[in-house]
Length: 227
Image (cartoon, rainbow, N blue to C red):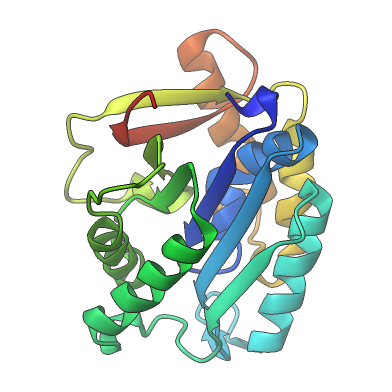
């Protein structure tokens, strides 16, 4: 479907870098085949990282996001909150659902990708609000709703549900995904950390091994139908 260049793809991410970790290969391939791709990052903010005790500004995260998406060929993105990193659980859910409702209604996507829930409260809140905003409606042209994964799901108390599994071959362009992640310089960790370029590559290699190709991204289907 993506190779036909007729899709309107919406990717909703909790933070700047989740879009690359989960969908970097998808964004690159979709843009290369002239599909419309819009990335929504829900929250950035001035935050002190616990791994190095350094302050990272919201403006830095937004610039990194722009640079990362440029590597992937995407120039359509929006940040909803610039002061709510790690604070999405403090926002009334009806407020966030209303904002997502408006974006979905105006953009009219044919495919939507949302984060898997994990131990991070922002990811859980966003999954729940996306699930509400993507409720079935009349005259809706969304043919695929799927969850994307990222390294932090390796620690979860609830395993994946009985969903369909969807793989995307990124064997020819996996380096673009790594290059895009490297633009999120404030998020980079040492090699053995889950949020390192080395680990991102190993994750893609693991998913590729599952289907007999060098590198892949894996998605979990929530809803899919043929129009």
